[in-house]
Length: 112
Image (cartoon, rainbow, N blue to C red; front, side, top):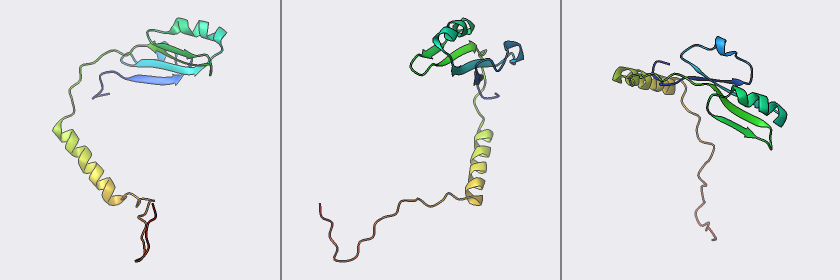
């Protein structure tokens, strides 16, 4: 949260009560609901809402997050992340690619 301006929890609908939510955080709920249930769910929205009747899925903004003016990351933070990435690459190098170049024997032709 130190470097973010807004922070949201995304949960299934009804998992968190608004009084359980930290003051500086917002809440987005997702889930499935029949059209009749959707009429009740939409009353909880606080801005954004979406309902897909074909799949009975919904996404609503239940509590907006407060905006915080936060400073950008420092050069020391960026350098520490790069050092950590280098260490990761040295300890666990990436796997070789699965694709291989086709080797043609001498005298073989490619027919278009």
